[in-house]
Length: 418
Image (cartoon, rainbow, N blue to C red):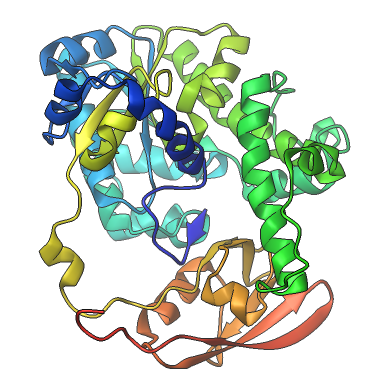
């Protein structure tokens, strides 16, 4: 899922940060200080430093290793490539499963590994800008490693249209023949439902604030009871489970086809944290020998809650020079994905963002931006990247069956020192 605003992580990390407020009280001061050294492995919950060789040996002994990521973080992908190489050195028979690709592009992945495509051909034939859209340069080291070493690549995802349909109609409403081969997911655990409830509540708050105005004094904060009573929540959970199940089944199938291989999953961290998502579905399929590794920025390493992963790797925070280098690019503040009918669908609007202030809502479909047709996420991303601070961006938006002209107003750039 693409997004046109930068935060350290996707929505599930919000739950991590909330939990961290209590977890940080229990981290020993010495461990908390030591874990801030980048390039170290730590134990979540205690922040104890782990020896790299021992960690990699434990991971290499697993049947499945899930390497979580935040999709727009280049350090995360560099870390994944590093761990992939280290695990391959210990277990040369390896397979890499990618959330980034739907199953229908599997033949293209096979051709790439076989050396039949150039990088440009691979990205075009796998429909990268349509099915994913995040910077391909961040992922290419992973793809190149697989090709150079003959490591099979697995397209673990399914087309988003099915996930959206489940979210709107529910799992049982989708005929079995139209489920793209996905089996019925295992029921979500109570803890997973609570985690998803916090995400759904944020989604409801965005919609309510958009309807009433972000500064409306009568705006009532949405409670957990409101979420659990919302008829859309069960469908939301079903959509997440279908997504998790699809990737779990692809990983399980890869393990069946390659009984001696280690299966390494490159997935969004929200699909792996706390053993929810993919690990839970894999266990239901009969595969429980699974480890989860996550990257964590040095400033948060001491606050990482116990149980979120088997192990974590400390990554550096952005350098002050990197933060201050050049003016900040405007950010619209939306999660986006390709719309089956054409255009770019808004799957979520960030609270307080330019998009929310402009009246953009979840499920809107942007068909034009700055007068230019928008047919895929990459089109909108490219147009936003050209937008200067202090300018207005006209958008043609399809909401249901009605077209709307919306102006997104980007604020002036902040003056130095402010």
